[in-house]
Every structure is written in structure tokens, then in C-alpha cells.
Amino acid sequence: MAFKTVNLKIYIYSGTSGSYTDTDLKYTLSKSLISSDTSVMFEIGELVRDYITISFNNDYLSNAIWVSTVGTAIDDLGIEFDYDNPKINHHLAFDGYGFFEDEINPQLSTDALISSNTIYLPDNTIGKLPIFAEGVGKIVVDGSDTTQITDTGNSNQKIQYFTIPANSSKVEVYATNDSTLLRTINVFNVCEPKYTPFKVTFLNRLGCYQDIFFFLKSIESLSVSDESYKRNTVNTSTLTYSTNETQQQRYNANGKTSINLNTGFVNEDSNKTIEELFLSENAWIRYEGKTLPIIPKSKSMVFKTSLNDKLANYTVDFDFAFNKINNVR
Image (cartoon, rainbow, N blue to C red):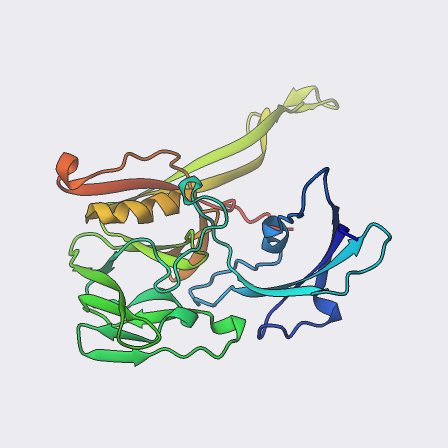
């Protein structure tokens, strides 16, 4: 008998691989063969994404989760297959994405979890480099300062944020054998005596929190919305009205703050970072000692190159993702 239907149970949980319980069962799906097909396919990415928590308060926590699928094949008589049934698979899930040209189900980075090989930091400021603990054995800073990376198997440390020491210039990422060099991240320390740098953190395409500093001029602006109605101010007893009472009454007034930021001069390798910032659905700014949510307001960018532009400065507009007057209810 050939199989006709596949029932799929999806367990989503934190902890170690395979440690799910009945309470972690989030979806039960069923799919039947179509015409002469010999297999069925389940697309579960969007379902799993609903259970990945995206929350950032300058704390750089791993948001990876485990997904275990249990597939059971049923024949045309409604009987379970005995061979290799059920089929159980375990997957580690990030809230990342591939580009169209990466084709279906692309394998994303398994070492440093940023696309660019360049990081810009203010002088005397530490940085954060997201790494995939399963694929990294050690990190070497400036050729001498070595940090071993350990992987306990727990989802809460699969994404680790290595602290780049202040005023470093090079970070080398090595494989788990501690000898194969996987990536070299160049760190540029920027001295900006005139303007105050702003740190923006966004969820990049590899599902990690990534920082980008804006070093040059910043401009804040406020846009206001309101409604109004015409009041009747006539005192019917005296048939007079007061000239200090408003005839046009304003209500539902509120505002939204925007900020215009400039990266300063960066190399063209930073195009990848800017592109992912524009595409990110989650971003925050470190502003007056607080981490506040923002939304990239700019909707288009021109990729700059050293050949065409020599020195590239990117200007990005952001909206603060909340109303100026607190109306949270």
C-alpha cells in the first residue's frame, strides 16, 4: 500500500533539542497526496515565526527556539505505515530570511551572524558581534586576545553576542576545530568630536540583533495631528458670549517625533548593513538613556560604491514608534 496522507505535529519550545512535551504541541496539520505526486510538502516557516519573541532592551538575548516535527504516514486504508513511522526531525529556528537569489530554504551563516565584514564603533566604546555557537570554536581579537566559545545545546545560548573590546581593530572567528579561520571582521573606531553618535539596533536577516552607529548630524522633528469642532459659546440667559472662550475647539491632539540620522563616511561593505536595516521590521534607538522602538521612515536607498562615490554617507529617517502624548490604555 502506498501512503495517501501525512499528519504532521509541530512542537515549538525552548531548552535542548528533543526536550518537548505535550504542552509544546502548537500545530497539527494534515495533507494528502495530489494526483501522481509521491511526496507532500509542509511550509511551516510562518507558523513557527508566530512563536519567536522579538524584544530588545539593550540586553542582547538569544531568540532562537527549537522546532520538532513528528510526521506520520497513513495509507489509503487509513492505517499507519510501519516503516520509519513516525518520522521525527528537530530544527533550530531564527527569525531570519533569505533573498530571492538564495533559492529555496537557503543555509544562512553558521559563524558570525552579520552579513558585512565591517563594524564602525565610536572611540572607547565596546561593540557586540552576534555569533552562532554551534559553528564557532574561538574568537581572537587583534591577533592575541582569545575567547573560547562553548555550546551547551540550550536554545538560549545558540545565538551569543561576543563583546568586542573598546578600540579593537580586528576580530577573527574560528571554526570549532580552533584552527580554521572562518571570518575576519574589521573594526573601525571613529572619533567624532562635534556630534553625539546614536546607536540603532535592528533585527537583521540572520535573525539577530545588530548595531549600527550614526556619527554625524542628527535632526529631530515633530509632526502633529488633531481634530476640531465649532462650539456654541452664546450664553442664552444674557444673549452674550465671552471673547476669551474659543469658538474653534481643538481635540484629539497628538504628535509623532522623527529623527534624521547620518552614518558618517563608511565603505561599500556597509551597504549590506544599510540594506538589512531598511528591510527590518524591528528596530530600536538608544536615546537619552533608554531603548526606544523606531521605524525606518526612508523607503529607498541608492547603493554607494568607492568607484562612484569614493566616500559614502547614508542619511536615514526614522519615526519613533509611539505617540508623543501617552495614550496607552
